[in-house]
View (cartoon, one colour):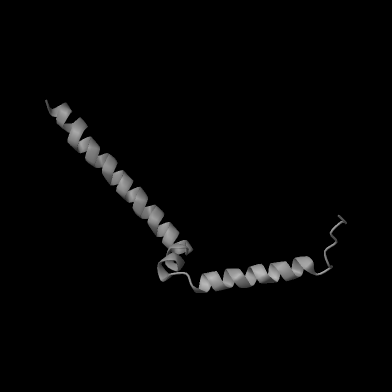
Length: 71
C-alpha cells in the first residue's frame, strides 16, 4: 500500500468542518447549559458551595460539640 499524502489544505478543511460542527452543537444546547457554562454562574455556584459548606460545619459544631461541652 502506498503512503498517504494529504493535500496542502487538508488540515484547514477538517478544522473548518470541526468548527461548523461545534457551532451547530452550541446552537442546539439547552439554555441551562449555556447559563451554567458562564463565568459568573461558576463563581456564584462556588460561593454558594462555600457558604453551604461553612454553614454545615457550624451546624455540626452546634449540634455535637457544643452540646457535649455543656454536660
